[in-house]
Amino acid sequence: MPTPTPAPQRDRTRYLYLAVIAAVVLGVAVGLLWPSVGKSLAPLGTGFVNLIKMMISPIIFCTIVLGIGSVAKAAKVGKVGITALVYFIVMSTFALAIGLVVGNLLHPGTGLHLNPADVSKVHQQASGGQGTTDFLLGVIPKSLVSAFTEGQVLQTLLVALLAGFALQKLGRRGEPILRGIEHLQRLVFRILAMIMWAAPVGAFGAIAAVVGATGWSALRSLLVIMLGFYLTCLVFVFGVLGTVLWLGARVNIFSLLRYLGREFLLILSTSSSESALPRLIAKMEHLGVSKPVVGITVPTGYSFNLDGTAIYLTMATLFIATAQDQPLGLGEQITLLLFMIIASKGAAGVSGAGIATLASGLQSHRPELVDGVGFILGIDRFMSEARALTNFAGNAVATVLIGSWMKEFDRDRSREVFAGQAPFDEATLLDEAPEKPNPDPVPVGSAP
Image (cartoon, rainbow, N blue to C red; front, top):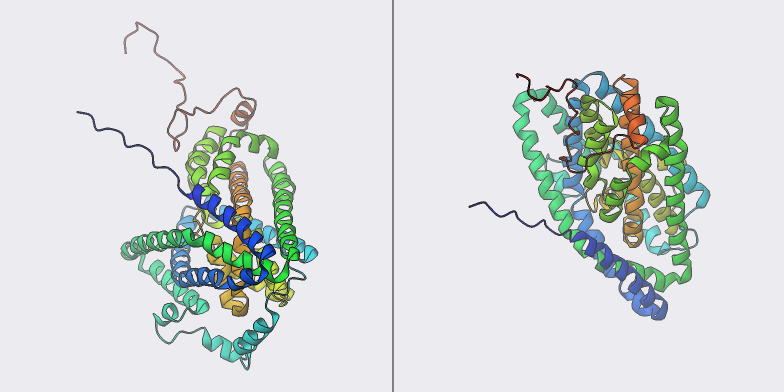
């Protein structure tokens, strides 16, 4: 008797997105109509931020250790892996620079004045009397596990780096440990996904408190950063990526994005570029990029080529700092955001990873600003779609470019695909290229 096919599980995260939107609207209404009540709801946002902070150390440890392992694997595959990594670093730097320029031009968060007295007092406690020597010595934990128990992010980063390089030295004997850390990372991200179901409550409390304290100026500032982020992503995709794609591979960015239209709709409905990973692999092979290049570039890019995330972290950090009257200097902006880019590796497609990375960076460099994460939470869901779409577009462009540079890109095939003469077969397995016809078919009736 054939085993019945199990019904596909319904994606319940879309209900979470709707709940967050409803919570934001309700929080705005409460803050405007009953300001005193709204301000009293601040502990809800603080509690959610504390839950996120609880997950920072294990997330940083797992992603950094596994990220170092991914770098080693990518380098071993030779020229393709090294070219991909160099390209990813350059493009992430471009994304970081564009985000910094736009953020410093827009000055998002100006005029909000979120608890300036409390922020000043905490800042004095956090930074008073600490020189360079004390700071460097403070990076070294008291024990191998104290970095996790005390929530010191830079100490966790140091332990993760040591563990990652030690596992590289162990070689094959370290593979079981790496597999164990992969399982641990799944557990950590599963816990994070559970915590994210409290996001509507946190968003409601944070938005109600800020709107209750600042009124319409809070909504205006949120609108400025949202529109600024969308505009920055569009400029990056069509201005930077489009130019690089044409100069490096003579491929039109509009043709490529139109070819990937269904994948963009899938990402838009799930707010995660991870959902389209199998289809991107299949479609890049169908487009004419060789299987080895696709197999190396796409998975590596999902961990190391997060252009949209770089722009998001840049603008969100500047927004939180300015809103709390603690603007960051240019040098401080660069060091903080480089840390965030490193910390975000390996967390692509994980719900809540952007908020966790933002909180971890602020906790490590400017702990007095961490509570502002609760405010950005209210619009994070509105920005996650643009973040995921930008990440996906960046990885698609990278695959075509590296295929072209490695002489592993069939241009004639790509012209046929873009012209609709070789349509993608939606009935095939998502992670396999369509089967090519036999060039020499055996005539009917002839001997085999």
